[in-house]
Image 1 (tube, rainbow, N blue to C red):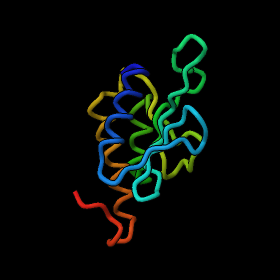
Image 2: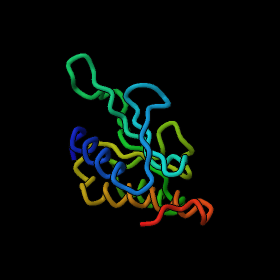
Image 3: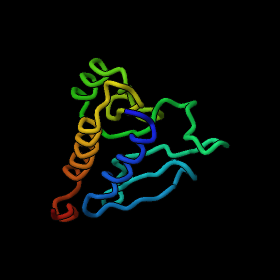
Image 4: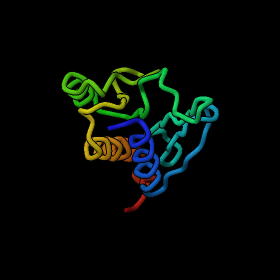
Length: 128
């Protein structure tokens, strides 16, 4: 999966869940997706001077993940690394690569959303 495809997919999928807000609290180029105020996805969208997304950082999409699942994903996929600038136990980052399919990326974004929703008090959980 190429970088631009990963960015486009992440922005579309993360923004499509119920009760999601999107903002740039870390500055321009880092789209942060929250559900009821809790972060579940961060997407790096910083373009360089030529309009190409900056390739200096391999991490594009950072997601919440259960620790055992995160360890297994990092071990099995070169395109999945421990969370970039995040708690390495509870977060993973997706990078462009041949071993990252759109289906896997979409599933991991949905899983991140579900984890955060499950940690919310029952009264604050969005209805489907």
